[in-house]
Image 1 (cartoon, one colour):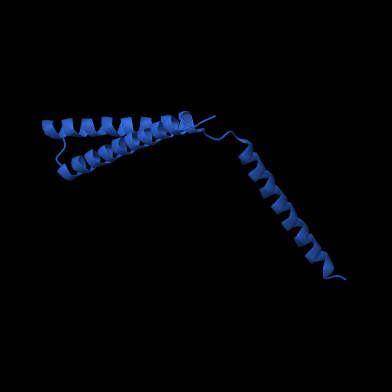
Image 2 (cartoon, one colour; image 1 turned 60 degrees about the vertical axis):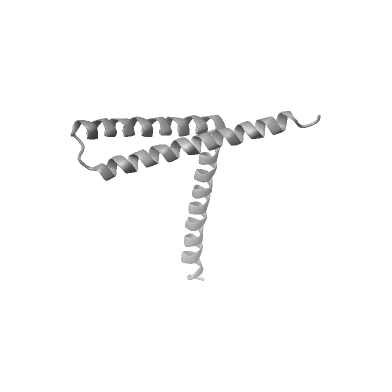
Length: 105
């Protein structure tokens, strides 16, 4: 009987830990998540900031401040890819909108 006591107390503490983790998980789920509009806005802002950084790097390279041409070229490619991705997402959203509008009711 004396061996049941320590096992029972360790199970009780494990049970308390599980309940605590479950409560934390529920609290994090209650927080409002980002919506589609918020995500699109954040993505467009990130693409715009990447384009601004690239423009600054190109200007710095042209003025002789930046000497690393590979850094400039990589940033130009990242900026270009971000713009192309944004353009493709816009085209897909417009296509989906047109498909929905042309559905018979």
